[in-house]
Image (cartoon, rainbow, N blue to C red):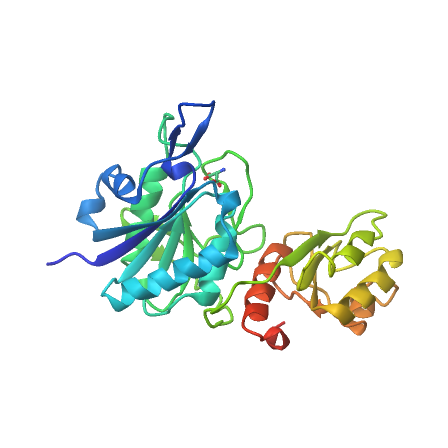
Length: 322
Ligand code: ASP
């Protein structure tokens, strides 16, 4: 029986990092083919073609690069790939994965993975994560899913997953309210839930415009938002406190901002849905939505920022789905 064909798109990160030589610390150096060669057992799971799209720490990736990944994945699927693997740094992995869940192609799943321990360390987790990602990307069970995150043998929905620890090999969590949708177990995919179907967004043909992410907090009057339009931002997300609230002094500023550009109200709590109809005081969710702010629904501020960016790039900001 011939093995499934998978295509690996590599972007750098810890999974590809070794000593940089000239300065202290490690940095991304290993190419996509070297990652495949370093993962024992991969040759029994799939035939894997490789492509290097970046070689950076993931804090230097961009939404536009994620669009290039989605485009390269489509080309590989057109060419016969039955699944796609993306390897990258973990710092922004949840964001790339979320963009791929918006822009991906339901003909074949994209499994996004990385590593917390680089290949120079004992117990490096990159090879095991890559093997598990290949098992997921090759699985028929995820054939109608656009993207998932595979890490530490867990399978996560891009809508909920986040990096929740600076160093643990179990850094990725969809908690506290969701949890993984499945595991890789004895080499097979064991699913106990389905990912949420995210909005389908057309691949932008132009650049994604800048969207600011601004955090509320105790006594924060958000005067910074007055500078956003002049700085060239095309949209903004406010990470509100609680269910989507800001200090009362910030309210006129946010109202003026919402008259200039789309503004989405999110919650910094990290779990639960945004409120819509509970509190009526100045700076509450009812007050702010009445002044033109949109509701992030289930999305964290950082994922709302990405969705607003791709909608703006498509001239479709009015299609905000929540
Ligand atoms: N700093 C690294 C990065 O995001 C961390 C990692 O890959 O785990 O590129």
